[in-house]
Length: 407
Image 1 (tube, rainbow, N blue to C red):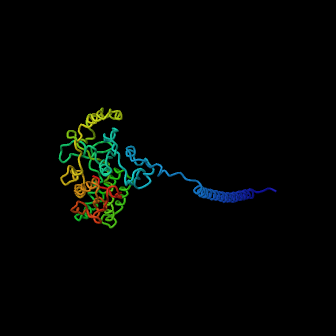
Image 2: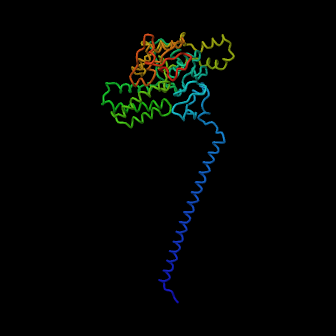
Image 3: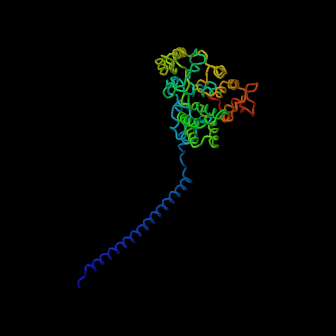
């Protein structure tokens, strides 16, 4: 019998349809089987990892974490001249941790001064004052924001002719942004501040905080604060709260985190004085031979190395006094901060420490009092009364977490 083309075409389409149906069933079967196998494998691997972690954590002692093993052991010159981000233990927390041999926890890291010839020459450590434990912390704190020459080099100018310089390059620069931010915050919280100024000041403050954060190299505290302010509207309750928060936070960055230091000014070149002039060969000789020099030769060579050294180093009262040698206001400090730094209570406190007598930490040394606008006057003895103006301590005992003001 002869099949017609119509019948042949129908049979072909039927076979194609059956083939497609079989392919669809096969694909569905393979998909389900593959899904089931993958699910079994995932559950099996996850279970294995969970049981393994449980067994290992219970039966095998884990090595100490890098946050502990990578802490620097000593607060020496090498530690200070190394960027804080080089240690995992310093980068994993909001604030830098103290080296294990250092008693106090460091709120922040100390920026190295690569332009200071006194330390880069190898003659002096980055924190050079170690003679008296009663006062060395105060003196070394100043070394983080003031060049050695301000106190130790001769200068006839009154007040001292000083300027800010960049510790990384030694070049002259303007006042630190954190000081400008603090002065602006005090102005923004003053009664005379008007709504008309609010938006302009808000934008200016945001820029200053970000600049100060970059200079501090200390995490993202100030830039995070700037981001929060950027998300607020001038005049809102949230904005007002952030301004008062900033007024509490910013003074914490007055301790050697300016990204700048003070140095004497050379009268001729108007550049910072960062070393004794013309003593490079003597310095090299001293570094190479100091262990072999007798006392007389050592003294003679040191005299050659320090031709401009003051016969008598400046004392605390020379600068921290109403008519002191440093014009803090011209250097960018606010009127309130200038009044705090030139108040005689600072000098009397340090004198009490040197004498071994009890002393009180003034309230202005605590940043939160800037927000409240409080700086109570000293009493007749030169200290604030306990329980009101500050905390009392005795030298030789731990003074807690309070710190003296840094210039």
